[in-house]
Image (cartoon, rainbow over the protein chains, first blue to last red):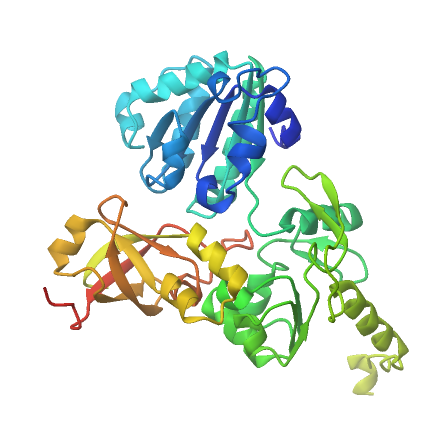
Length: 318
Length: 118
């Protein structure tokens, strides 16, 4: 089974009575999530707001988000896949070996209670964060959780949504999807899109040293990527567009200071539920926008004479 | 690796988020990303005092120095906000996913000699 059963945050606000955060810490990383969309808001079918909702937090450590939760389930590191697999079995009524379940750090009673709550919910949501998707198991953990949400629809309405991190990271995925058919890790070097994470994804390209130039927009890989990838960015001509001085702008050959999108530049951002939101700038900036700079670079490149055609090896040796 | 091993759980904090809006070019930001949180029993066992320095060596070969503070993490785990020091510790292999393992990898902890007195 594949795919993502999802919804908008508006539906969560108006309908969700069971909210599960898995491997995420919204109290610190999405500070307005509880109050705008998930916990405290009253909704059309949730007239009493917080009192009508149950919040479960699943994580490997007790983060500040645990204070907001009705139930906190502390799993052992790198055991998320096992917990999800046990829940899938319990929901279908299959027998589970208690000793195997105990390896997850949770008791059978805790797991059965969560499975029962999921099946009895009127509208359940699984919000999952980097604690699930960037720990060992990675995409397999995410796929298991998306499958759990899909399978729960045999009993009730259940959806899953990733807790996206940096500003408009969802927008990057959405635009890539509707322009190339793929969300990331896309190569256009042959004139048509090819998708292969591990080969065409940024970190892999940088670590192997496959690329000889880089244009960085709205990101700071110099403070987030593995050191060998950062070292390669420092070796090649790297151009950074950013309103602020960052670790990446310090290692770049060129840094364009840009207007801050949403503050002094217009644009569209995609919320984590993939809803596009137009931005109206409140201030004027002396700096150009990202779009203006990219457009001017594109015009300058287009005005350059084309490269001479590559000489075939067979012709060169004739 | 020969020292006591821990699971390194890197993440984000609201303090760090606030400081990013001020700028990453400040001592305050560096102090945040160079401070790790450890369980008090682990600190006691290793002879580390609050504010003392430790060197972390990663299972992938990198190393970085942090200030140590006690906090609410399970024994055997360390929490550090993402930043240039964690870049030096995380592995480069993405397992074909495009993303490195940036949470929950093993590090060795070595207390340094500049432990505060008291």
